[in-house]
Length: 156
Image (cartoon, rainbow, N blue to C red):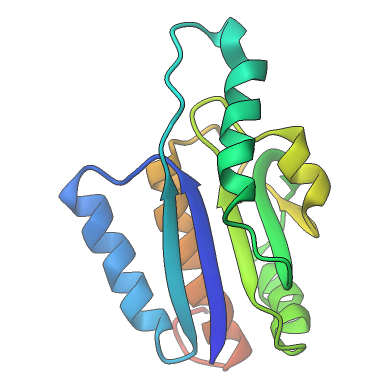
């Protein structure tokens, strides 16, 4: 059984996001345990506060990153992967048995302090999306990746 931790700045407020995340967590449970750790967003009133906000959020995130395992930072400047390539990348990491930790930043993104520690910096899309969408999309792509690895018919 693989261990996946998702550290997310911000929470899922609407029930439809929670339901979608719960569904993919349930589907993934045959191959991996998934734990989500929510970090409270640092409030800000203007984008000029970005460096200070990212620094504060990074200090909160760092408390939850395990010493061992593979760290994946989700960042708009990260590398883009097809679902198949992401699956192969994960397969090379999970075969080792290393726990996987994913970090999703808040409205202002993710600190360079976090991305510099990451083994993989991954962009889900060149589009900017909310952390709620990113969380659900990450869960879906994790499920899809494991289906590809296991040659299940979810991915065509």
